[in-house]
Image 1 (cartoon, rainbow, N blue to C red):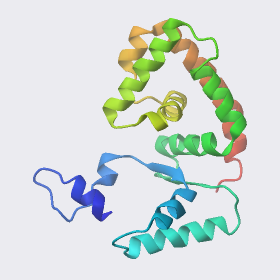
Image 2 (image 1 turned 90 degrees about the horizontal axis):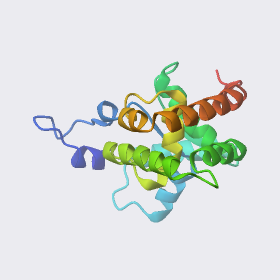
Image 3 (image 1 turned 90 degrees about the vertical axis):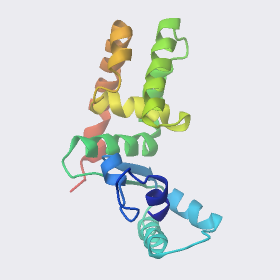
Length: 181
């Protein structure tokens, strides 16, 4: 949190203000990232690092693989973040969705669409390592206008991709979230 405050100081804002929630609607990451960061050694450990390690230990006591999200309950952001969790935890879903986004025998038009979707994400601050997961999550839960230019430029390809991903999501998501309270 302190690093984020230092790196994301808003003009006219307080250097003590944590703006993450204003910058991003939610967050997500594999739970094991907490341990990976901890194991690297934290030069300035604080109460937040201890809290996150406690979260890791609590979750991993009962699970072999887990995913952590933060989002307002019942919101579209929650659905978006849960879609990232499903991508990470359900290999069958991830493989099928990836094959729609990056088909084995893609056409030049499809490759250009995916490149334009990635560019839109990069402009928002996303990286290559999360691009395909983000394309899937945004298309299946709402794009928020982020892909408007690509959708207009590649109308037919985008409609086809959107239809395939939404149908796949509709098959997997209810079962994935059925035990949530």
